Length: 292
Ligand code: DO4
Ligand code: MG
Image 1 (cartoon, rainbow, N blue to C red):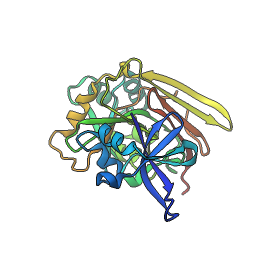
Image 2 (cartoon, rainbow, N blue to C red):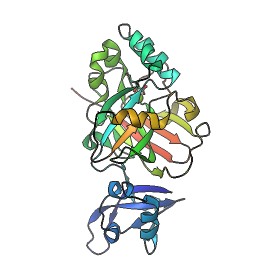
Image 3 (cartoon, rainbow, N blue to C red):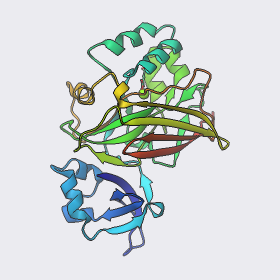
């Protein structure tokens, strides 16, 4: 089952309100969450049985065409974290970009403990269709298309979504200690547009992650990978995140990129990014370059 956080105009009051929809093909069945005593997607996802809650609320729900609802990032109040160097492609790219840090990336790929870093708070996450940002002080920034885990407060994987871990490769490459500045800034992350409930088995090798970038109407990059290439197990990443830490509001965990454009590629103002993941959908965002 796929769910989305949506903004629709309340028929009674005429005021736009955030709600949750069950997505079936091109239609969105907008749920009356208050019937279940909840008010957010997170509360639904953190319930004992998210599918049952959504199914129960579906009866009598109003159906819209997806084109008529605004799709929001499926985040409420959770923190966003990310794993790094979880694919061979990322290990190689990181070693190429960093003279001083190359051995760290080499070591972390095979180490028991994965690289996990803080990525964003909800205010830094952009909605589908909105712009992600290239920092004004970066001349080499790329999108990182990442399969993303939605975790409840017990850090159980309750759903999957699509994430974009925007990364300033020049800042990260200059010195590994600059990682938080390369990764965390305004509009540094996109999530959505849908979450896929994780209550059915996931065929890793058949789950393709594809990145397409368009500039002035032309495709300037295409690359793909699949979850069979991921060097870590998904529950293992969630377990490491939870060691000696608490997530009372749940968390999103991006699981790393397996697609890195060639070193001469950087995003430009006005580019259009599409990240497609089998079974989830397509996350589309434009790019804005920050001004000094
Ligand atoms: O330290 C590097 C971060 C790498 C990363 O974000 C990734 O592999 O996706
Ligand atoms: Mg990443």
